[in-house]
Image (cartoon, rainbow, N blue to C red; front, side, top):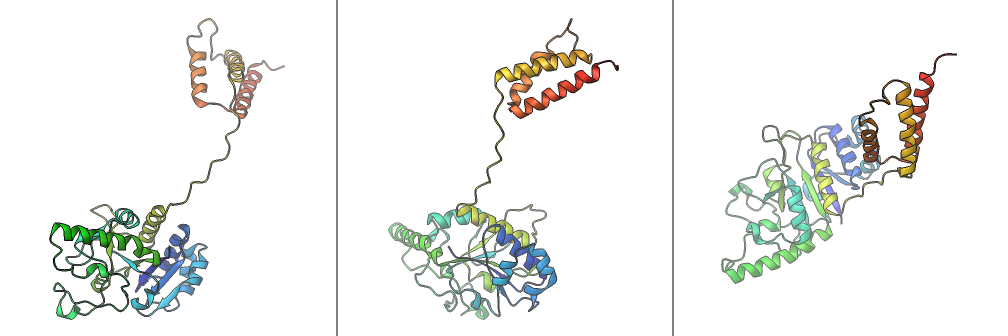
Length: 307
């Protein structure tokens, strides 16, 4: 599935590099910058340093003048926002939204309907909640008023099923994650064009995330929703020692502990049984048995009187 990260009016070159690094770690490489502060930001030294090797992402990145130019080939737009707006798309956590999106559950739950074959770059629709200044601005299909007559149970259910089926196929042509400037975040008119505002759950007393960190979290959650990457298998631990090898090692240790005066043969108490239980819990390998025998051998040598 085409996945794009769009940075709007980014002001810090280092953040662009950090975003490239975050994207590459999760296997994404489609980066678009909308009117960044520095026209040459992709070539700035700070950008390259913070990218930490993700130079291919920077090399493939595009710089465009307007958000419209960044939306080619994508149909599902996700804004990022710390707090919900009074008007606009629903606010969800990334994980919640991605689960709903991939399961085809996005529908009239938020009182919005999706329209098939809707061009996000050119569509406009006035809405009574928009100010006169905002009327006629491009909006996403999720923000269009619902058809009349939806209030009935049967009508609502039909709209629910129709919208859900559309939501299940919409991302196939691409999904984009939009991030605003470091200082001001996303403009309301840009948020209104999106299907959802993603909010990363954070400490209520300190919820501000660096741009690179926010991209990393969302890129990770999206990659996990798509199936994720497997954790590399650990190296083989070696062949496990059998009971006879453990018994032989314990006998060696009993000799060594006696030689150094740690174990009194006349009153051994439960030292050796306890050591036996401890080594059983450790599930020793044959190599570890050799190491422990080496320790016992050194103790015996140290206990011998100097000749």
